[in-house]
Image (cartoon, rainbow, N blue to C red; front, top):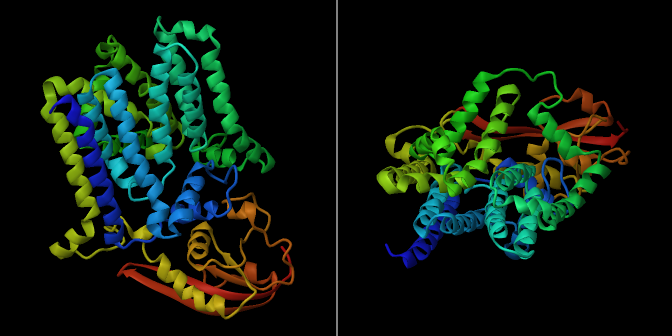
Length: 483
């Protein structure tokens, strides 16, 4: 390959993979996953913050659905398009730090990663986060090597947008500071205004979200503390959770590429001597250690350290292309084959005579929701003027997406909010109103006693597999008496 051919080839591969993933979504026949329906609901009422996430994902969905309607592809499209953009940001980073060849393989490694293959079918806040992280690193490297303000301001803006996508972007700042401190040529920037103005710009972009949290009693921060068990007595030593987390990182990067990454990290001391390698290690090791400590002492989801894969996709080809090129190629191929197998597992199971069940269908959580909502629809239509209330955010999100009720609310008799619906909806001021309640229990005495009368309208059952079905009970509750 010539130097000129790397970028066009990466563009072709990225376009083909993206088009293929769009086809796979249709081919699988899946509905929206709960978080996707939840985020879509956010996009219908744009704000500076939401219960569990900052607002960028909602804004992206709002822009896409404004152009293309509220179909499943329109909702998923922003994330799908962001991943190829991130691959090209990695190509630019690889070219700056090493060569176009390394940049090409970094972009290809990213597009083939199991993490991206999985998230590529669904809406995720990791999509804009990884793009902002990649571009912020690119502009940071440019800023450190050039005089002026433009690159610093671009870096600060991208950090701010990244923070408005997912708070994990905050981990970029200590790594950037380490990069400046540990390189004698860059330390001069600590005495200049540009880096500090960039940080202030990032905070200014985040400020509306901080204000939203302040006016709503900091629900996003409370939720983050809850899922990480910060401030909870449950914290302790959890070696098994650390093992699960490390295993998740290995699988997220791919079986062979994960081994190569581990090998490279074991050689960190030697790699540290080379400036480009050192830069990448600074953007891998601190965050990996931080989330590993969180996993050991509390809880950590597999994708909480996702930004480490930006530098990892660069480090592996940079270190191993020269003398172990076949391993890098094999790692990418294995990832692509594994993605094909995952995407076509229902087809493979059918051909092999394997019956899909709750245990072997990886897409079960995105099945049956449209049919369930359609089963509820006539019962809701028979009682105009009622308020639709769901048992939890999963039910509410899917019913609201499919049915577009005139009024809906979460049931919250005074507990701290557990989801965004419990923040933005209320029945407290709806005394005397009738409610259509949809839940998973056949009897709801604690709820029914808050109304003058209760009637079970029906049970909606959607069979999915022999051992898995969606099932809800629909009640008409008349004359709400208040909590």
